[in-house]
Image (cartoon, rainbow, N blue to C red; front, side, top):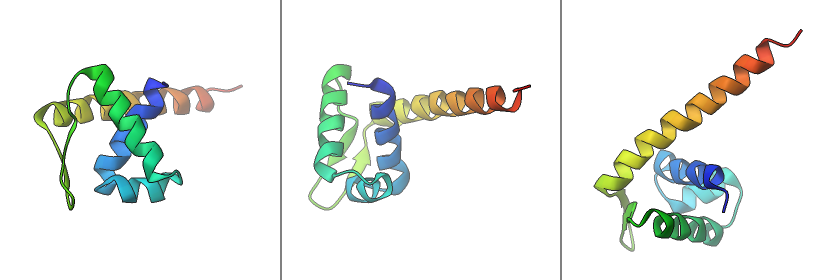
Length: 88
């Protein structure tokens, strides 16, 4: 599994308020998103979300991981932009 892609999916779920909205924003099936998160949680050994039939919320570990993911993804974007701007 591509960890970076899973981090992006995870942050989209949080940013868009749920699996369905993230699915629409990313243009990938909700089942694919669910599988990625289940696998990510398995690899991390923690639940990132509390899930009910109507609601998804972050666990304490999920909130911490979200903050770290946002910083990492932002740093990657910044690196990409800075390299692109420094082309001769």
